[in-house]
Image (cartoon, rainbow over all chains, first blue to last red):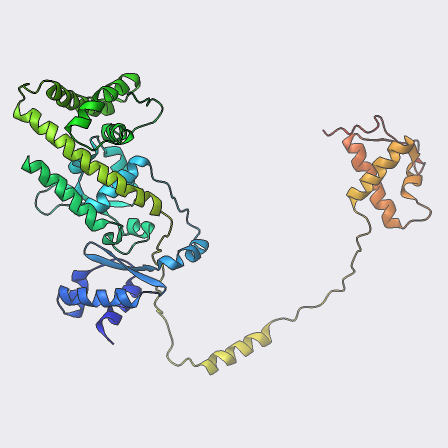
Length: 177
Length: 240
């Protein structure tokens, strides 16, 4: 069986997020080869019942966006839809600019975001991880958030690259002044 | 030109500031910031019940706005490097905030619309005890044995009691008739002579129910005498 199919089997059986590193280790290949295989898998899942969701260095199998209504009928879970206006601001910061520190969230919003960040953490839409360079915490989207937006990776958001570029332009313009 | 903004709740100073600028169709720069300074400050003054933490962030922005406005009116105003930094960063932060707020519309739109679902919780149970030589034939034999041992269910004769008339129907009939004649005997009501026994029984139950509800009064002078039914108040049922 080809590698991408093997990875599909592992992801299906696991039913949870698996890191690229673990996949590389398990199949005794390097991470780049895993990347390629995941790419193939993602492509082959188009127009199928499943979708491959990528969040940072982890991947997980979800149901396809097209099957959303169907599964909604089956699930008895309460699907909370509303997020406050401030919550949306923080979510977009984390989606478009994440991983991002709370200091930067406050800086761009011009107001303390403690309460909103805590609320989103409790709802499982964002998660807090330790940043690599200094010992502060940074916030990033969870699989749950990507799933609620119905996207496979944050780069699938509309204008993702343009927003990145615009923000960079603003920042460098300030430095030039 | 002044803009009335008193009802809306803002998510922070930038939310307000950006609204002021966008309502006038301005771009974000020092000139537009200087122009909305007065509106910004008058908004803060109308908000009496600001939470402490929030008001601090609004005032901080107001202070920077005042600096920008002062500088635009008095170009020779001396500013410290820190003040200059504040002014520059306010513009940048606002520009980024604007971009993110705009991008947020997509997030708000998409959220919860097309949800991808994670696998439902599964339980993998391993078979702990399994004797080696089970075949489908074995299972079939055992099932046959078990079926043979199942005690036969004896069929009890059933008599279907036909629904002749419901208590509710009877009550209604009785009410109408009592109201009609104000006073009648139970024998007349139930039609003892011509109807079946079941009619009499249901009729009696209906009468008792109506007595209980206080719609009629019933009187029987002696054992096996006629039961006289009468209505104390016509057409006004009392529900107690």
